Image (tube, rainbow, N blue to C red; front, side, top):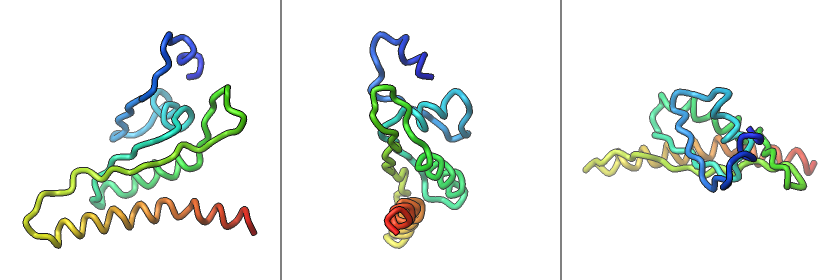
Length: 120
């Protein structure tokens, strides 16, 4: 993958990866090995929870492989919840927002657990 990037006359600043159907050898390195920031877009429906959770876990376990770096870094995750259903019932919107926040908190809890284990 690094060889491919070296052949480009202009290095990409943004790479969009649509991984709704999963990862494979062609798209995973862009997200897991070359990115500094990953924007993870998901819909907070139970069907999306497991796949998105696995994606976040893989992202947080990965490190970038840039030659110019002095140290290996983990891509920084950001989350975009989309789409929140348009509803005249505020409890529906609140339920989806709460679920999304709960999931992201759970997915990122591994970071605080890892930081705690390194300090003890």
